Image: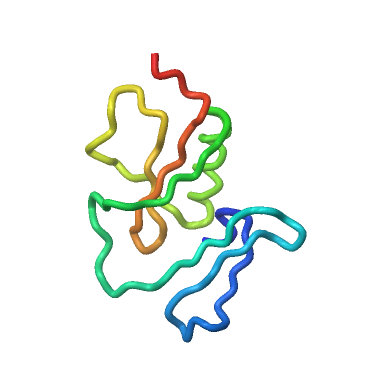
Length: 106
């Protein structure tokens, strides 16, 4: 997951129960803490991660990059007409979206 965001993974202090993702050395951004859960992934989770990109081309490229890292494209049953996002799942089946911020909703 850290390589998804370009962040570095820190696990010290978590006792094997999670990690903190921090921006690369010299980079800026917010630290993200992730904790392991023993519950199964939900088909329609109430909370998920959105990755924002600037264009449709960047969205396609990012989806391809993440699939190459182990993510899977999700045949999601709740896409609206003309969506600005695509749904992927990490190797543990946790879903997340890549959102095209340039998308014109008409």
